[in-house]
Amino acid sequence: MKRTRFIIALALLLTAQTAAKADSHIMNATAHVVSLTFVNGGIDERREQKPFDTYALCLAWKHQKEFLPPHPPAFVSFVYCEQTEAALASS
Image: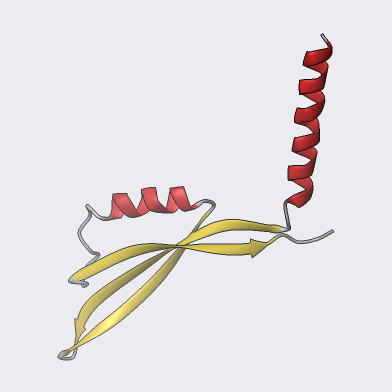
């Protein structure tokens, strides 16, 4: 019984320290979509951004987009994900 209490106390102590070390920043992700179109004999580049809560969600969305053709009039488009850091508002 004393050993169980010790393990629980140790777990609570480690959890409290981990929570105290957490800063006021969270990691999000942004998907960048780059599309190329022909315009007046040249090539025009159009960029869009889509925010995500996690990098994993961004990668899953990117994987879905890889199998879809580009939106007309674009002849090619590609997607990449980038991790972004957002500060939490302090109260």
